[in-house]
Amino acid sequence: MPPPNCLVIVLDAFHATKSSLYGYERDNTPNLNEWAKKGVVFEDALSQFVSTSGSAWSYFNGQYPYYSEYFTYPMRSQDLPMAEMFRTHGYRTAAFSDNPFISERTKVTKGFSKLNYHEYTQKKVEHDDGRSSLNRDQVTELLFDELSEWIQNNDPGPWFAYLHTLRPHNPYVSKEPFLSKYVDLNRVPEQENPQDFFRRYEEKVFADLYKQGWSQEIFYRVRILHDLYLSNIEYIDVLLGEFLQTLEDAGQLENTLIVIMSDHGEAFGQHRNFLHAKRTPFRELTHVPLLLIPPASWKIESRRITTPVELIDLFPTFIDAFDMEDPLDRDGQSLMPLLRQDEGYTEGARFTQSEFELAVIENQQKLIIRIRNKLDSQGKPKYTPRMITRLYNLKNDPGEENNLFFPDVVVNDLFALTKEYVENQKNDPAGDKVEFTEEEQETIESLGYIN
Image (tube, one colour):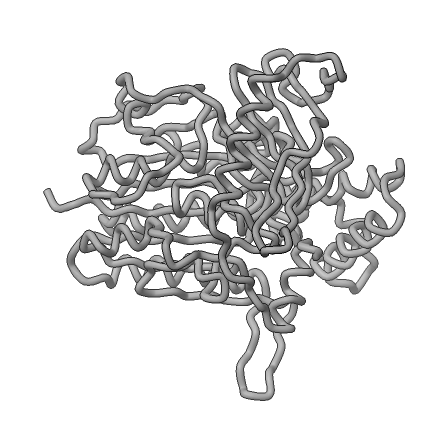
């Protein structure tokens, strides 16, 4: 049998518990649920960063994020990411994205022979040079179409493909028939387009949040955004199902490992948070869906795995499953022992972070500290733990609502783990600062990433 293919699909900003695959009360992901019957669902997968840039760099490299004083985590010359690894082992590689952090600008697409990046706008715009910008729905659907065409028209030989779609990431507004299933269209003024109305509604809510902070009225309005988010989840679930079914009907998935995941979650009022960038790494921002569908020839039993895992485990899993030689050390570990129901996966400390806070999880205990990330006079990072802020018992308090930390609480072991993590980052060279164009900066700000 020829070497297997590998397909990775990232559904951006998808908090796992908002999917019926993970127990959400509405059946909003019927296609994911159906495909999960052919694979393995990881019930407790941890993202390493609360926004795309740091998370993507991390799972592309199987390593915890390096120190960076910048908003982005660009690929460095010494990095050997998964796409480069596949390419050096004879695989054709391609990436399809509408996220500005998954583009040539940030170099995280290193190793992809083909990159199709599409920047969307809310409405079609005619540029002076004759180009036309696609609207959000057109871009989303185009990504799936282009990837399907690339796979089906590919030359003989194994391939590695990566798709990163800004769904269900904000703006949350979906199209019909999904929109009216989750929000009341009667609130839309007559003769006004519902998508335009709710898009402006969302922008106004976020603007008011930034200016005024939380209030009872704002909380109610954020709940409406949450319903828009759910409509977006069902929309992308349908597109995903159609895409996978097309490939299966064409016989393209028989010898393919499929990974469906997200880069981070999303907050809708939990811990008085919203969106995700620069937020405390609470569970709503770091608990992501992770579904692996192996080729039938691997004879992996379909089931759900409760063992806590991390997204940095994906790269070592590929190295193991595809029998590749890796010259670098990775922080993650292969998930293949869990898939095969063998011994070999070690449950240890797990880490996740934002720009300013770091969390360590071990034995159902979660410690969160603040971190100072500044440069000294020699331009080297002064990246040291600054203050313990929160401590949770995840077994008794999975929602992280009861902060157990007081000055006399002993957390020496957990704090020592954070100090070691920070010291490792301090000794890890940073990447170059990324300079975005004015158009790209506007797109980034419209997605809720505020510098």
